[in-house]
Image 1 (cartoon, helix red, strand yellow):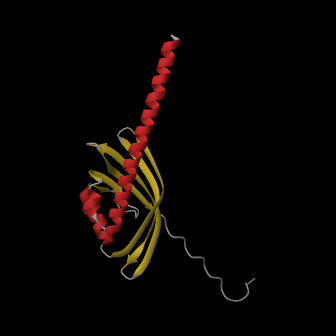
Image 2: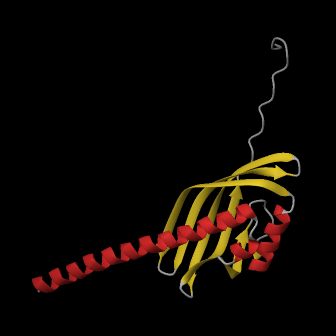
Image 3: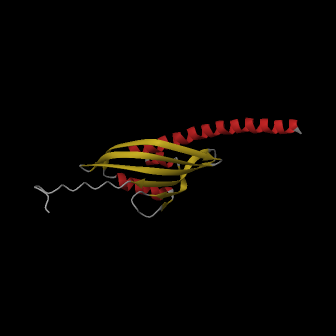
Length: 164
């Protein structure tokens, strides 16, 4: 009985180590997907970006527009948004990736800067991606992006002494 318990414990330890090693490999694959998507966004390579999205993806944009369904709708949205943008810079940080079998989610913060026509623009935000392993590769099945609202400028005090 003791031998059977020790044997079972050993199997769990060995399998647990193998599972975490597999998870690490899957996290690295997902990291590569995210890096490729961010780079494709930066360059406007929608065909390249589409390789990493499921055809049936859903997306919640950061501007309170209705959710989008399907890569065709998402791609069109990106194309319209980028039509007048130039000089894009996108930085991603604080990425967290969790893998649970054939499903995974990733969260990260981002910083965006560029030009809209002749005007400089910038934004900060968060993205949550849900990925699914389909036909041996990770694809994004849901993208939820939230842009932080800019803080209002503090009002300038009126010139002169305060009134009583």
